[in-house]
Image 1 (tube, one colour):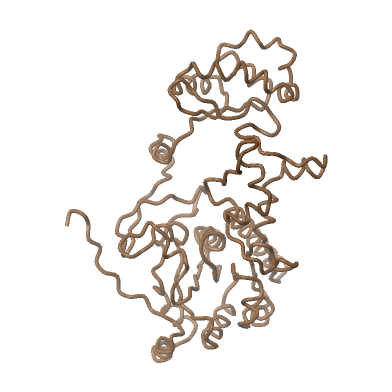
Image 2 (cartoon, one colour; image 1 turned 60 degrees about the vertical axis):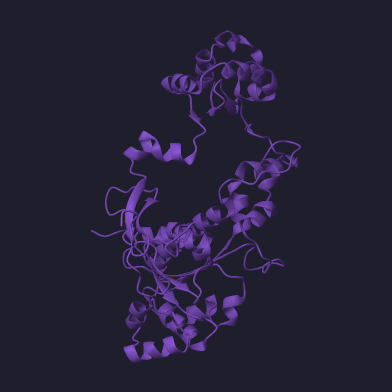
Length: 408
């Protein structure tokens, strides 16, 4: 048997998160992802933490790929790219709209050499419209798309999310578009051009907030830790100064919750009888619930609520996440060997298949590690590759220095 995307070749031309994460998700499922990098490499190769000259952050987003260095300002490099596209199934790029067209590497150029190729473009604002070339990194996208306007406490400066939401949403939609297009290519024999905007991906993720505004005309506001539609559904402080997330989306769970925290006597209060009434009377409900939880130990209340099936979780830091028995049992953290970083811990792909699922077949590539290999696959001999190297068109990886452990 083989992985679902075995035999599919993907060209990835992207930096940082959105495009590379899309490439990694495809590579994890068996695609041969050729990461095309400029001589200086993907810009995330410079992001900390750095160990033995390699970025650990880069390795987290670029496993299972091969690295080909091409200076695309060179016509010879552009020709290499077109040859590679002729033998590939997918082209994923995350450049400023219009930049690749100037190099003869736009969708129409690559489809001219390979009509079946799937061309997936990821950009901040999309390939069309007056702001198509506007610069946009994760925080700027979150601001523009409205995400920050509903994040944080009412009346305070918006609080940016702790993870890169816009880039990750964009990566997910880019992967979705690519996979759907691959299915279409098999059925219909034609490739597609996909245009993924990080702004629009973030708007799509804000489904409830967008629906509220489009239906009522009311602009959604930040709500702190409260939920937009239901109550109680938020963070609570416990007696030992920890925070616990608790949410109950139906009447049965609300009843169990109130009984578990010693407030069962209030279940006859008509203000709290239904989903909608609890939200309408959220303040008086929280005036009862918050003081009760503040008298309880975090571990005790989590155990009590879990026993009766009420959704809850302590707010864990990342050490607590990775030390949790559930994460250990599921093998979320794995050890791999990197030619320069040595043994390192990484998180696995979150998808588990019954067989031939995603794994870490190879660590993130060193810059130009596979340039020679890929160029030979395209028909270049040693002499031709040597000329490309001399002209600065490509770059071969330096031989890694032996990894030295602390014990040595």
